[in-house]
Amino acid sequence: MDLQGRNLIAPLDLSVAEMEWLFDLAGRIIARPEDYADVCKGKLLATVFYEASTRTRLSFEAAMLRLGGQVIGFSEPQSSSVIKGESISDTIRTIASYADIAVMRHPKEGAALVAARQSGIPLINAGDGGHFHPTQTLTDLLTIRLEKGSFDGITIGVCGDLKFGRTAHSLVCAFSRYSGVRFIMISPDELRIPEYVRDEISHLEFEEVRDLTDALPQLDVLYMTRVQKERFFNEEDYIRLKDSYILNAAKLKNAKPDLMILHPLPRVNEIAADVDDDPRAFYFRQMRNGMYIRMALLMALLGKGV
Ligand code: NCD
Image 1: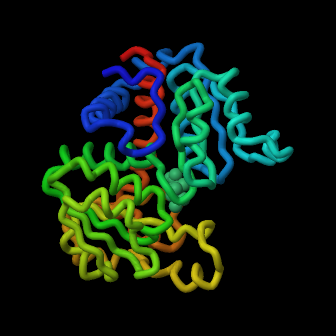
Image 2: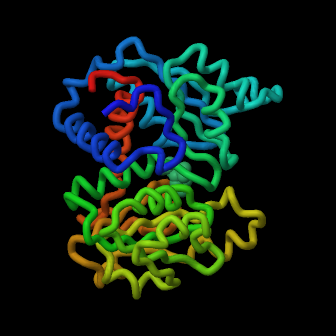
């Protein structure tokens, strides 16, 4: 599989075969991480973050360091020339002249695509506004695959802010190529999945509902999401909608014994702490898998040891 030199901007940029190949590589890294300790020696990753991040940025940095590479970057645009009015294109050109690969997060939809046109080095979209977040999706799919073996015949509930949630958009689009998947979209009316995402899965079985409790017993995977405060135009709407769904231990009584509860994190109130010790809570394992799949992705895009 040759992914060397490619960008990852949108969830459909990778074919099913390419994704499966990355999952297999991540599995091998999980089994024997020591075999990969030097594969990216001499390579430099730039992390270019214009928006807050804990897991995505740190897991990319940890991934590169664990592969023997090094990292430069900024996590606060205020500390870079962005504050002087520099454009994304000029910033990315600069970074590309120092680093071998870059990861970018930006509040504007399409920013990563614009940057990729100028970069000349592989560019990975770590979230562009309320649009896509393809490496979170790789993390999510790897987590389901490790547990369930395949995606065939599974019912996935995606719950919360399906309008602004880029992780939900990317996940749904990525699954559009797996015909054995059924979706239940659970959201308030105001936060329903946008049409461009719904169109991608028009050939799959899916329904849109408001109630989580009714849908819960049918689910094999429940993907909870945070209401995206930063994308709201007014605070009143956010306050009204922010606690639309709160999953707790009592509600899980009606769920399947082998349900997987996923969440890209950070959570606010949508999963109560009393769920954390339930064996069906996978969100912390999911978070760790994010580092392994990013190790596989960095290796592949750099053409290293594969
Ligand atoms: C997500 C994001 O940034 O879109 N976080 C993450 O990368 N794990 C989810 C969110 O912020 O709600």
